[in-house]
Image (cartoon, rainbow over all chains, first blue to last red):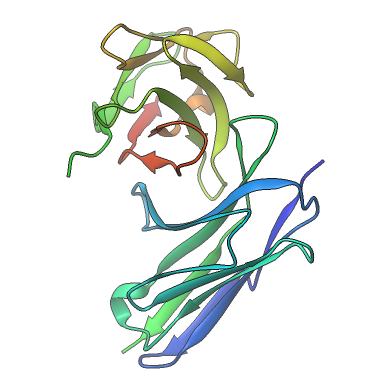
Amino acid sequence: KQEVTQIPAALSVPEGENLVLNCSFTDSAIYNLQWFRQDPGKGLTSLLLIQSSQREQTSGRLNASLDKSSGRSTLYIAASQPGDSATYLCAVRMDSNYQLIWGAGTKLIIKP
Amino acid sequence: AAGVIQSPRHLIKEKRETATLKCYPIPRHDTVYWYQQGPGQDPQFLISFYEKMQSDKGSIPDRFSAQQFSDYHSELNMSSLELGDSALYFCASSSGQNYGYTFGSGTRLTVV
């Protein structure tokens, strides 16, 4: 059974720092992995999608990497801003079905 | 760009009442997913539809039913509502397995 873990559960850093959020999964037979952002009480915004054959994806100040063999993905946020404060969720999609299996999220606070 | 549209945004119902949530996927997306997210929890997969047929089923209670119509919009029908049904209900759509999910803003259901 696939399990997705995100570390740390919460992170508070000063504005301007570069930071890394971690996501690990127990079953490497994933189809793809997606990083989402969720603001309190609001919807889920897709940030980056990495197919199982890819190593990384970049969008603006965000870079996500995938090491399928070791069951790890990282989300790198450069030059953090207060507007980056949110909960960041990673989710994996398995080969066999459409469901997403979610990590518990990392709550990120960027202090001005 | 058009996004996933959910209606209503907020809904308040009494116990034992019925609620219907609607989801309009991104144009040309053929798959719709429903997720339930309780307070402080990660999203739980309920059910999905591909080309108007149910494609996968998760932790959807028997009191709930859903369908996808010919125009690809989907409706989640919830009967005999319970206090524990209070949650954010998200709809997501995708186009085939090669692409990621796009989520709607969600419907916040409060059962009183």
